[in-house]
Amino acid sequence: MEKAKVQKLIKVFEDGRQEGLQKHGLVVEIKGDTVKMDVVGAQPIDIVKATVGLVDACLQLELGEALDMMLKQTYGEVTSVNYEKLQADNGNLGREGVDTGK
Image 1: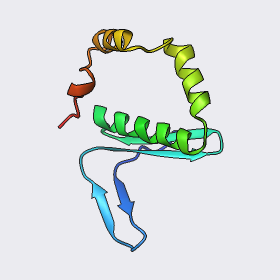
Image 2: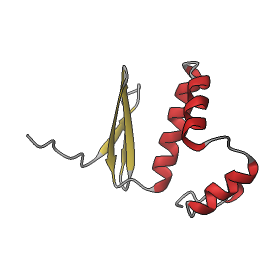
Image 3: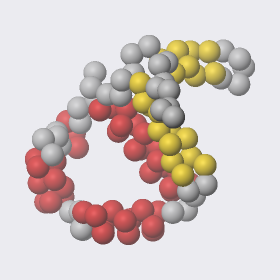
Image 4: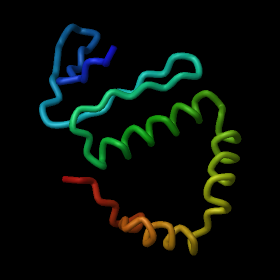
């Protein structure tokens, strides 16, 4: 059975107020060791925001060492010299000029 695709994301706040996301968005749901993402027209900035949120969650759960280990296994030691190379290789802007998609 094919899963239905998400058409619209709506934020519902504790006070009952609702706010729709008209153009694009991403919802990350974490249950135990399973991560699920629902995407509606995701823009690059949505992926960046989700990544920052996941890193923050790792730090709050005191998983900073595990995160650091995984990053080193994947990318090696990241220094200011090879960070710029990583950015150039990926066609991205440097730290000060991050493209926010706006």
